[in-house]
Length: 284
Image (cartoon, rainbow, N blue to C red; front, side, top):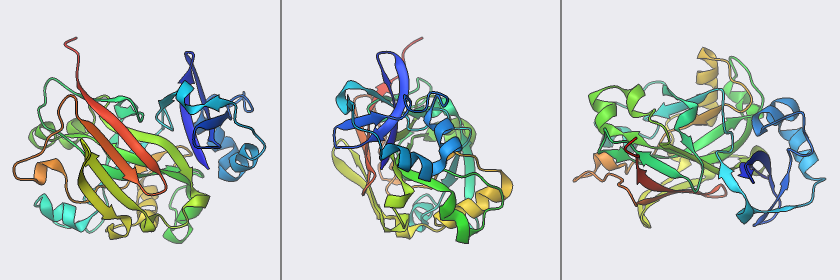
């Protein structure tokens, strides 16, 4: 199933897509849980799947405004240099262990919302990625048990300000508000037994700029969960972005930067299409 968060008439909610254009609200059936993260923590994947099976669609998808599927994750952990060709195109060594960094909540934008190019940067780059959403938390998770902790998967765009990232710091370059696309929904883990079999495609203004099978990851999803849970406890609703394949803008000659008015799409087979328009930040 596909789980999503949204606003309608100024009210936040969450639900499940039961048909291509119709959804059922889960929030009305779980008033004690105000958001999808809370519902995942209480019912986990199995409980939410059982509840969703009893519901009937009551809303049209076109009548809601999407939010990031988990609007306020406790943690957003990103993995860098997780495809060999991407590491090499940037002139970096292939890492011996997952290279991780943190994003903040206010960097996330939903599918259909704008990715914002801040005034202090001119080098906004795209990074199409697979996001893993945690369903059952844990610490020191073994790779062999990792899939039991996954709620589902989504598309992610780790929008990066390269002049800030390379000239100032990685943390700054990855954490400007409204630069990280996430969505449009979470496809439940029971529908994706092996995410390595998926294919990622990133398109800039309809032109393909990245295209790669996810089986080319240096560290697969179980290895990432084992490593990350070794240094921090994972909680329901946490988001892990698993790295981008080759083709990013800064490694091209000449470089290819996103600019206001551009449309960037990240599509992963069976997970839908994350679509965002780029806009310049307001003077204020």
